[in-house]
Image (tube, rainbow, N blue to C red; front, side):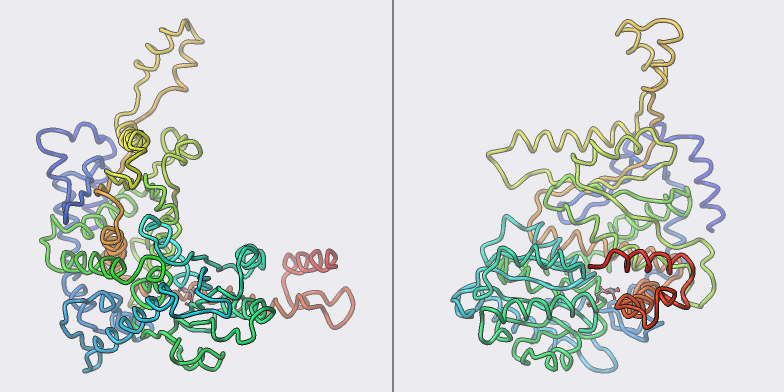
Length: 538
Ligand code: F6P
């Protein structure tokens, strides 16, 4: 099947995208869900390719695997766990069984505790030493940081709670810059770590506790923990009443829907947080039950496979024309690359068709003035995934929003249509160029066109929409992973660097012997780097 699909991609290369547009292509190559539109018509996928990709999804067992995920089967096989972030947004009341027990009472109980705590913080009932909480600092990294940071920023118009700040990097500059403007007596610190062992987070949490202890007699009273390791959080000194736990079947990069989302709930309130969950839940139902051709996550996944596996494009750009989604590319980098950046299939063999692509991006229009040059005229094709809100949250600046929308639409149009040499020559001629110089100047102004893009269009970025968008991408990653035959829910690739870093941290403390002992046992390059760092100390 893959061979046929790759041949179709080869044929499509010679044919281009513009030529595909005839009667009804835009409509036929779009998926709709709850007022959201995913238009993938500006790609080289035709009817035949789509049918083959849909058949591939079926043949790779996507429907069965999807059902296995939603019903709590241990599909994270390398870790022997279920994958149930969807349970955190299951507001339907339906049970979900793991190992014969319904997990939903526990999920509901935690959600109720989160709502009560967030409500107390927001209303001022929960106080710091200096009175009502004015600032919340979420300390976490990876999935315990990117999700809440991205979502809090995305939903800024809905904020009516304390200010939220985020610290993730072990680089002390991060925490110093965040704490610099805060009053410890009115700050709440959320230590967000699924494992409660991550070096960066635990180091920053200790720094925050010392900072608070300078002004507050009982600093522990202004800390809460968001973690699966409730015992470790308690041992660190955070009482059970302020530990919000979740099970190991929620992967770090899929954890925004539960306790890791507490900063978001404190910022926007429980009602809007529930709307966010409801949006995701609606997307879950759609993914589970919509017919394949109209199934938005599936079509997003098939477009991704078409571009990366079939056409061979190595990266994809995520380009939100929505400034508040400024952290979405970073969030998706973890979601997609930690999930599908793999080389080994579930059965332990090498992946025949590779893993997922490199994902990168920036909000528009900023990116236009930075890297779009390469997107339009570079020698590599970069499939672009545009996201666009039809309406902004600033009615008084409607004219600016019109400009934003116009720019987004113009980019996908330009990528597809390009500009021919003849058109470029005519333009240069009109500017007075002649002869060889006319030719030379014109060549620099040619756009090959036929560069693929998709557009996800929605009304405005509300909590419900954001929930839908994140769940859409989660399911896209899952569907791509299943079709490629890999496990999207482990991340063994991050382990080696962590192990070596903890050994190196000790080496950096200083060698036992003389200069020759720097980094003994390490390769020449690493020893040289260590020696340099030692020479600059103090
Ligand atoms: O190192 C990768 C990772 O394990 C991610 O998968 C995870 O989101 C992040 O670290 C943080 O882990 P934790 O929430 O356990 O601190």
